[in-house]
Length: 350
Image (cartoon, rainbow, N blue to C red; front, side, top):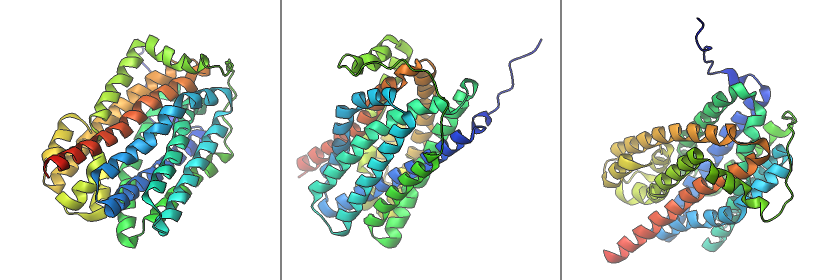
């Protein structure tokens, strides 16, 4: 009797289009993580306010709430690669704006306006990226592709903050970090420019108000997918203490921007978050966040596979938009909640 076919963890790397996709994805996320370090450090240096850090999350979650569902419909109606490239151009434009205002020490409210623009572009980027992934590889290779994509994200989440913190330490100039983010987003554009995904037949729905909710209705009907997304939402929402890492790095652990980068690098939830909150040791804080990040990677692979393999092609953009809305808003609202709670605690303690 023959057993199941041997699993090949490298099978998704066969198509050159997917190799370009996953490389560009890693590069772009490194840039985004670098920017996160620079924004947090610069705003805390200028305002010395934990609430200012929380408002970074709020400034990015509002456009995600406003634009995620329309973005999903956009992804399902038009060429997904083209939509992805347009969103990356928007992300790069916002990063260049941050660099310009940072170099001239522009008013802080402008930072939040540019973060709003970046959040709007990311509201399109998430569904476009997720819906495009199944078109880049054959169906039998999809789970392997999700693992590579998720693993690449984790690598970027480690390298990006460390590189951003290191560059900020060496140069002392956040504007260079923002420009690096813009450049890396454009590298993703260059890698995907010549890629043509296989044409797949899609039943394109008319852009009506009712059709915007098709993805949400599909998620609600799929109990397993709804459970996976909801569990991740609350875990991330209540684990948003990572938004306060600039406070910990500067005022508690005294490790500067380079240390901030390493703290963000191995970013969680549950016991790891509690340990981090109680710790006054840099190494223990680093280990707690490492455990949290490792646990999250398993959740991502499961959720992404469920969301894409079980979803009809014509709905993948809108279902991906719902997934991005849940996870993106929980991340950014979690950051705002942490900043607001720290501000309240500071007020109580006088």
